[in-house]
Length: 149
Image 1 (tube, rainbow, N blue to C red):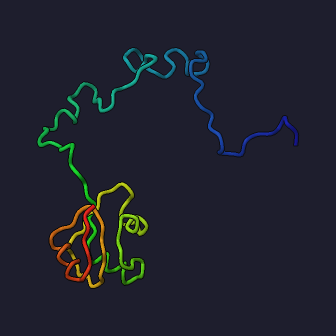
Image 2: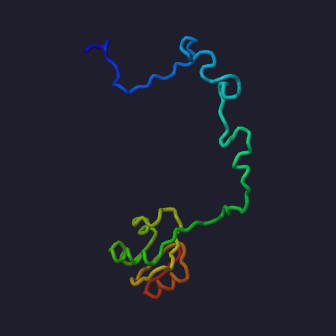
């Protein structure tokens, strides 16, 4: 084996079109771009959503309603999930944002709301952003404390 007979493995390379290298290449003249029109010009780029002059879908579909830019999105955690963590020994007596982040129930900067589904038997001191009325009642009935951040 010498340098003169080295070649890539079969199927590992493509031989691309050699465009604009004269008529003999088969890709001279218009260089595979066709005749005239915007797409044949250099620097052409199509707008996102452009449909060839037809009214784009984004403009055809009617708009309605509005989005409140001040909306606060809360992550809901139910009482039965907290009870499950107590049963598994992952929570002992206090539940804070750090504990929830540790157990992957919420992320560090998210707002958390405790919801009232399920039954809570353990006495827990829970400190989060919000509680539903039923959740707060259930926590206090179990002998715990619901503290709002």
